[in-house]
Image 1: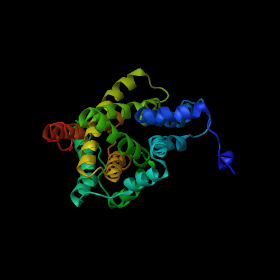
Image 2: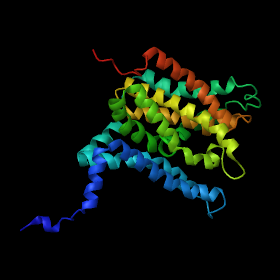
Image 3: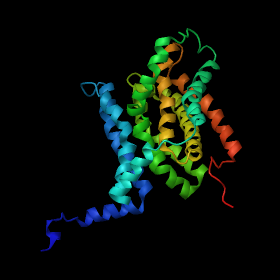
Length: 293
């Protein structure tokens, strides 16, 4: 008996699409990541602008999982079920010494606070650290880790795209291109209050916030590549790093009444930008990749 009769037949178009995606995995990954995330962002934008009833914040939170979904789709297409299992193990693998964990968990928030402190007037009205804040910080960190961007983004950006982009373009050029694409993925956010946009704002808000955000994300891309390469391609370490960038925005910023979206991004840029520049100088642009003999 011919078992192929019971198997679903693929159309020529479906075969052609899969063939194209296999031949162009990076393009296909970024296309999927953008489409999935932007589709989930549109209802939130419309609701904030009063064009759609209801609160669509949950969909906006889910949009961060566009890169996650795109990565697993591409891994499944390229490597099958075994590849998906391997990719899941790679994401969960915990590597690196305790020094790297301290650097990520304590050093990153410290750079953000330092960036706030060096801006004139931004420390005005500082509410101070309380025992309750110190106790609640790990809770917020876990919540941000799973739902505030890191888990949704890093398996895609650093788990799928980065190793392929480093292999194709080299560590520095690959990182800068990834940083640019990572920045552009956030573009719809500037139509919302998440990035200082939303109703009542105009082009001036975008022209003020976007250049700072672009420089910030490019700096983070450099630092994240360096962390990735120095920790045996550990995606888990990048999940922690991303959470350490985002959590202070939720927990610490309310302690600084004089800090707004622009000054927050500028604070992060001051801390991460200088650090990224030092990494570039001391690694000579190799970002932790060992030079071939």
